[in-house]
Length: 76
Image 1 (cartoon, rainbow, N blue to C red):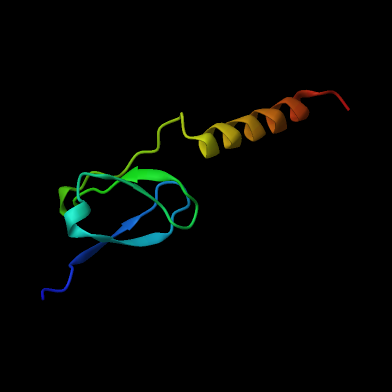
Image 2: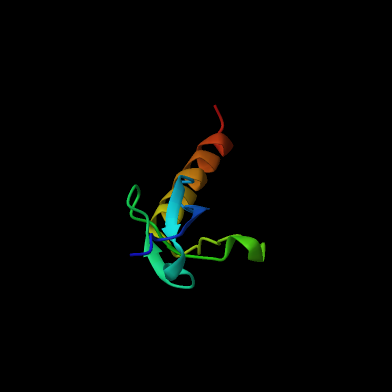
């Protein structure tokens, strides 16, 4: 029985290094650490995975950054 072949891809949400089976290339996956979704990409293609702005963690981060920016504009 052949052993599965893996490649390493960083999760675009949490940045962890993930071992992804080659047979999952081109498929949507879920990070087992942060539950973020991403597409398994060929590491030799040179294209980096992108996180869409619709991802809930990215939306929350944007909200927090906006709230900090608003606080800095208030006069003291």
